[in-house]
Length: 120
Image 1 (tube, helix red, strand yellow):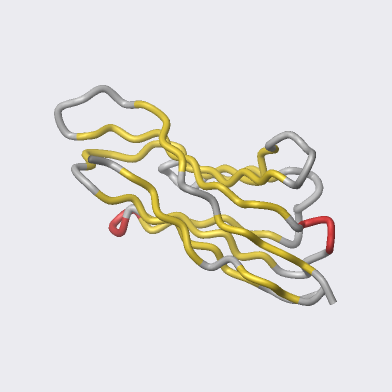
Image 2 (image 1 turned 120 degrees about the vertical axis):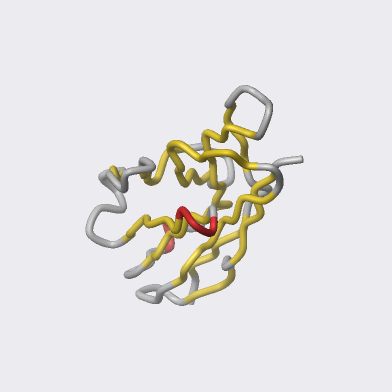
């Protein structure tokens, strides 16, 4: 069974940094696009950053210049390096990946979410 497991969330002061990880496990043949989303209390889930299997990235305007998405295809893992964190970055962060499992059709999988809280 394919799943995505996130780690790295926590409490950080404004201006601080965190690095989120999301590892795919199970019978994976290939992972296409990967992404990070976030959902703050009372708000809709929003796209933070995406990365293709070739390493092409895209960011929401609100995080450009502060966040960096990367991936390690050999480890089926995507990362989100978050620098210059602001209170408005507080949210549950979810990873998302378009995965081709062995013997099955590809579909989108979601991680369970990890809480990021930016507060003094």
